[in-house]
Amino acid sequence: MTPPAVRLPGVQRVALLDVNETLSDMTVLRAAFERVGARPELLDTWFAATLRDGMALTASGTYADFAGVARGVLRTLLDDEAVDGVLAGFQELPVHADVEPGLRRLHEAGVRLVTLTNGSSAIPKGLLERAGLSDLIERYLDVGAVGHWKPHPAPYRYACEELGVSPDEAVLIAVHPWDIHGAKRAGLRAAWLDRAGTPYPDVFEAPDLTATDLTALAAKLAA
Image (cartoon, rainbow, N blue to C red; front, side, top):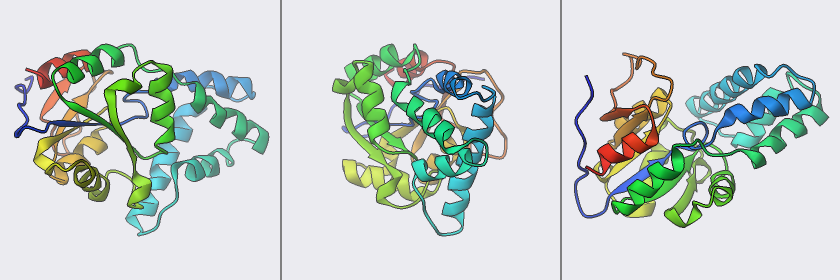
């Protein structure tokens, strides 16, 4: 059953946007793996292992940035030159086709748009500048300021404090159920972008909204 549209409370309405896979089309990196002579399906193995290791560091009370963790995982799969070639592909990523109309719909509805990523804030800044959408984004935030990867509650609360809103005045938009769960546990609303049409894991707190593309999700949030 499709959840009803959520009307965010208060005058200030904020959408925190996850970046990797939510905004950026990372499947393009398959070509980067192929260029260095690696199998393109290694993208999935590498990205999952990068998230695993970053979250493991957070769970054990330590921190390393996304670039360092990503490079460390890649070095178990490729030589140093190939690692550099794959990571350079981040500078070429496009946005998904639904991102522009979705972000414009939210912006027109008066929703403040802010990115919140486990990576560097420079990545979404470059991504959205290349897409001609940077004028829609108020802030580019990352987890480095708190030294904890999402889904730890600290990054979500940090973002709300930086933006001067309470957690229940913000909604996270993400493709990852673990990110949705983290935001909900931190007191935010959460909207799941389910592009693949997959079942939501029962072990996580449920999203307030679900849609298969950002345009539809924006329409529900702006209702």
